[in-house]
Length: 190
Image 1: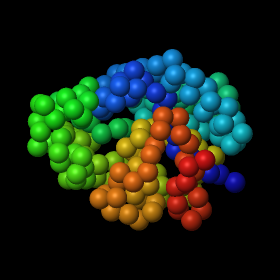
Image 2: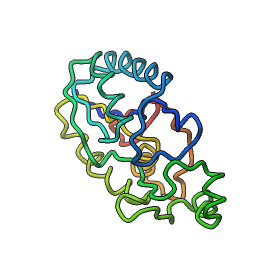
Image 3: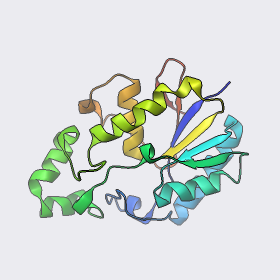
């Protein structure tokens, strides 16, 4: 029986400092490499046979490490990309507040209404991108692990739980966490 799993990539130096990573080419930190090995060991127990990964560097690095543990093919999927933060990339929320207080306030209070960039720059873009993947989960022939980003997993949570994007911030999605898409359509942390 096939299953669909989501995992947040391992930690990076920027995520450890709470910087907005967006599409920046950031590699895994030492902790992130350890987390990727943990994900690989868990993936082996889950029977993963296929890995879909965001094309961003930190997700690809996680996928390559995970693939050492499972007999899985790796495929890039742009639908798994993080929000493109545009000019806010690399900023902490405090730094963003100093650069653009109105944008920082909107991101904190109403993130579903913020657009950082024209392409893949809003949370609604993530929800729209992940929807076909969730819709096709029952058609997947192999147990698939989707290596992606925290905001993409939150977007999948809002879609599977039929929540509004206003409920987006509910729940923590730590680096290395694994989420299973249940037959009911719900996404639950393993």
